[in-house]
Length: 62
Image (tube, rainbow, N blue to C red; front, side, top):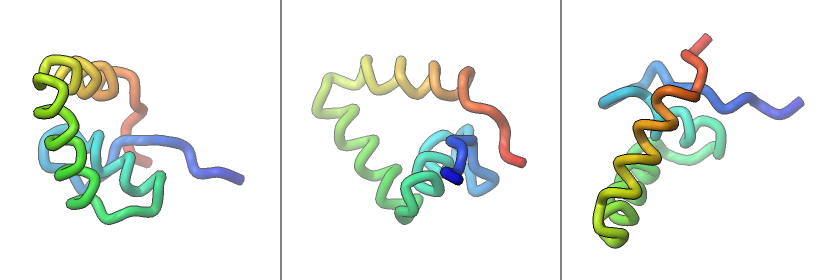
């Protein structure tokens, strides 16, 4: 059974990037750095908006 996408207990801000990293099986630092780079490359606004939406939508860690 696939693991559900959830916020992580290993959080820097809200646990969104940590949760994505756990879901993908990647290193949380790598996901955070990639997220910041992609956000900056897209003029930051879409990245901030997506992060806020995921913060609201993603369930808390178990």
